[in-house]
Amino acid sequence: MQERFHTQELARFESDGFAIVRGMVDVDMRERILHVARAHLLQEAAPLEYEAQLHYPGAPESLDAPGGHTVRRLLQACARDPVFRAWGTGVPVAARLRQLLGEQVRLSQVHHNCVMTKQPRYSSVTGWHQDMRYWAFRRPELVSVWLALGRETPENGGLSFIPGTHRMDIGRERLDDALFLREDLPENQALIARRESPTLEAGDVVFFHCRTFHCAAANRTDAAKFSLVFTYHAADNAPLPGTRSDSLPAIAL
Image (cartoon, rainbow, N blue to C red; front, side, top):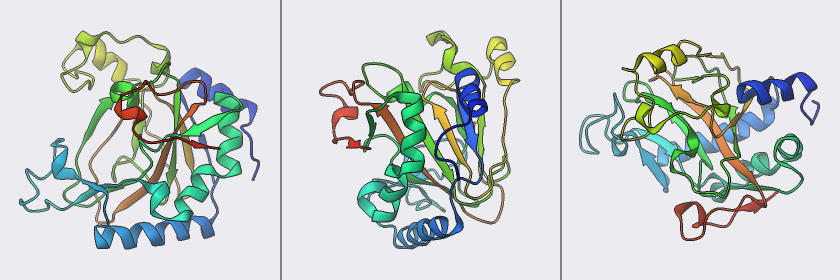
């Protein structure tokens, strides 16, 4: 497997705000990651985030409601198990990120750094948003790396993107109180009509800009979906002091 982006992949990232590297992770690494993720999910090994804590559409009303202990994210992946950190800091990821962010790349331990799950029955809908909405860095220039550990489609909560939105300035009036795109506005409806919902196979990896609008539906299948997600920034694009983004040290690649 080549360890750098092809010219076409780089061009796609620059124009659309995301690029997919097919078959980037071999079966052995995927199975090692999945084994740990499933074990930690079964144990409800902290730290984690429950669907009920977010109150997104479709989530259980509370931790005490039916499905209240449906896990959404296993947090702090790099500190959970060496296999997560090995993938997130490995050469295939680092070499591509240097093409996007420069030679000195850092992995944020605050943002993403998790196993993202979509469980059957009680998973929620994630509206159209930019990851940058709650982050605080000198520049809005971060890249998230999403490893599909199984097949991902709109039916099981796979990602959808609006190409080119990383280059757009979307006014605050077009967002709701939680900074999701307001789907009742005609100008946003026209934007959403441009959506792309790629099917990911196990081992596919998506690199996407923190300003690219994306969303994910609920999991309407009978099987859980797992993804491993990390976020990166250039060393000179430091988190702002005193903010949540600055609450844990970054990891140098």
